[in-house]
Length: 453
Image (cartoon, rainbow, N blue to C red; front, side, top):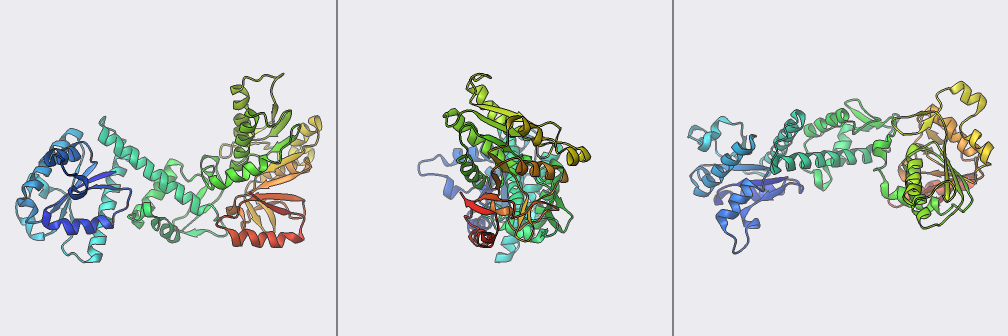
């Protein structure tokens, strides 16, 4: 977002101080920085206001309302405001005395911010209020879907969307390791978010408003916020692919290196297994394997591999891979295929059993996990998927669990495997060395081992 700061030369030190408290994602236009030697001063400023700014903030005192430059800048801003048909000028009053005088261009009828003394706390409060008002205007535009067909307005909305998405990504990343039995206090979440450079100007009230918007727009599907605490109830494919994405790619590459030509592979649903599917697809293009058989309950993973077979022009006779998908209902949050008939599932043990009875016991299975706890083992949130994960292990020779570091230390509602089940865990430890090394040491006495990627 681009903001033009209009002020008299007398107030330039104050404006610089205010600027220092505003976040870096605001691009602030100040003539001393943005006008180069040789530029046409009048033309540059006029263009900055009328074509290159989303808002103009004017700092008003007795000097400013008599400044020819401030008057010119306001006149251009008023013209632009009429053209775009929305508020463009945001006044900041520096002296209460000028309120009794005739402010230029009917600014006296507008809501304004104030800054009557120049101590550090007052200036910081002004910066916070500026951010709050800017966010308020953008929120109003988004709520009412006021999209004007001019570049400036579209830029505002696009940048507002980008800002909201960036905050949502950070919220999901921070909350990812918190569950119902260890929720994160909202105040702690706000502290973590506002400590990041891009969001330093965010106030607590703005943050709470953002959380409400996230819930309304589905950014936090599966995440519960009760007004005091926040935690992950269930991971959703819509957002979890963006969490720990670098770690998941490294884990997927390590997993793919375990595959050999002729393998029968069982593949769970989830963001990590989706990354494995992408790695398998890349390897198939390079003809790294042949005669693979992949059985999965993940629509996303199946589609990823089948996209490659289509791109390569393979058919039933020439394809290097066969993809099988189990039957059942598709879960909307994970895109996993599941069987809701729990009685039939328990008694007949369907799904992967039927496929492996036809094709043979799998050489390797790649299994997702929601929590790994040293005192309990491997757990998940959904009872529906417990039996699927147990099938994956029961009908494969080699059982590989994919877990980014955030999964360690978490116990979900249902445990589906223990550390005595001959399981290999692929993870990374970058930034989580103490945690992962403590698990490595304690698992030495079990049948489970950790493989680092």
